Length: 176
Image (cartoon, rainbow, N blue to C red; front, side, top):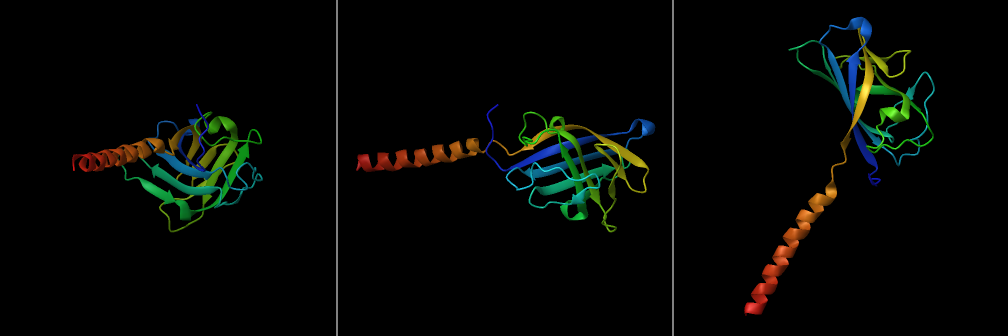
């Protein structure tokens, strides 16, 4: 696959409940956007995490559903304060190939906003987060590439439309 030149790459993060809590129907997923041109895009955080790097991580949305049929709850970008990331190598590709999770040793996010519908906290296990107060631990089990979309196709549509108008103008002038 050719290397994309975009700077913002968005990934879906899929979590599963930890083994000790199987049988629960709670779900957790996220959509996270990274700017691979940011100065710290390949810098590891320390084990305690660090303040959210707003140049590198440009958007976060976590969706938690406590049980089957229950209303989903969301945390948005402003709800997050800290993150941890540990790259396997010094150069993580944030495009779709290879997958994001295969290039990382750990990625976690933490929120402390008490007015948000739930709080997400770090755990001592890589890729694992906890819903505070809900006794719900989740582990990241896969990532899928979300965007950027194939924008060249949209450019082609505009080009064809423009060519059609040019042909029409040219045809009108030759008929005069």
